[in-house]
Length: 294
Image (cartoon, rainbow, N blue to C red; front, side, top):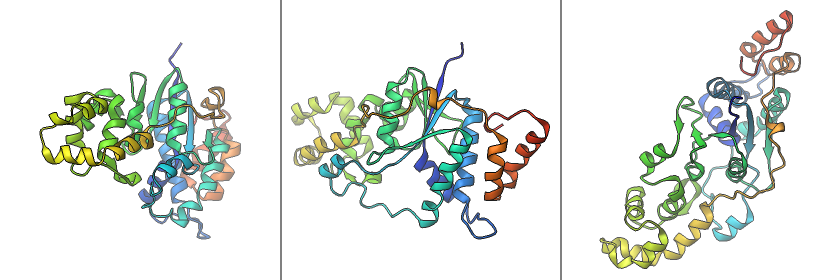
């Protein structure tokens, strides 16, 4: 029996990418549709390339209170979502429902934590479609990352080491030292990705680093580490993804299903996606149903 493949899609990130990748697409009435169209095309590409047996699209549901308590400025620098993108999420979710693709948004939970929980509890091969480096910590011999923009490449443990200098199980400590500008998490001044990787290679862990600070060669780095030790401890808590959420989906609900042209064609016509509607109209006239993205 072929191995099951679970594809977890970072829906908010893919929607953003689609919105900026396709400019000024709208209906004749002026309704913006660029994010919806790009989202559908990216999902189709992912399905065609990786042939998942199960999948789900995970959307951000807000920031957990515990992260804001630890760092009130967490993600505070981010620009508000463009109105034209926000207006399209309803149609993206409507499309997923019509296509029979499981999607989930948990209130006050970040997509990363939901993805981490689903990936950790799955017994199958897991592919995570995102470009978020926080999720490197999940990668192991059965969990891989694929980029929505470079969907043909797969990142495993070796690729994480090549990109960061540390193995996936050390990503949390690596990020705790460097900080993360994307999430507005300040790291240790003067400790960038290469220095953090060298420190973890030399000492093996943060615990050993703190116990052997006098062995850090650079006085400047040593002093910065001493001054920002509490920040590093806070950062470990911030960047460690939760894997214990009560996510209300099952493997059965995530199964890849055949698309029903009779349900999808009216949606495509409403959105004026003629290139997507055409093959389904032909399928309706000839009889059998297409696989998703076929």
